[in-house]
Length: 140
Image (tube, rainbow, N blue to C red):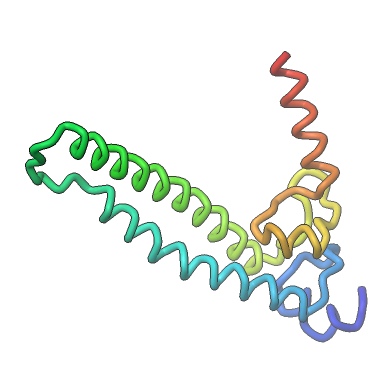
């Protein structure tokens, strides 16, 4: 365990003791997750509102088709955002129970660079590659 972790990383229950993350890295990742959650919360509501059926009568069939397509797209986007929001919420809960930063399959550290790119990641690069290889193998 390095000095940053002793001074606040794992000691505050923010990250798993084996994550290898410093207190500063953990705080950066927690902040990124919180900011993304805040942004997504508003986006989901906005996209659902746009996707709602308005009940307006449209004279032109092409215009009606365009409105239908836009509504479908917005609803699909809102659903994808809700799924991402669930992953972000799960990652933030992992900070609370000090399980953030290690792979759910092997327990090995996920790595700061990977978490910086995908702060809701639950698998290390190696575990992710193994999972994808297995899925490709089953698909044949």
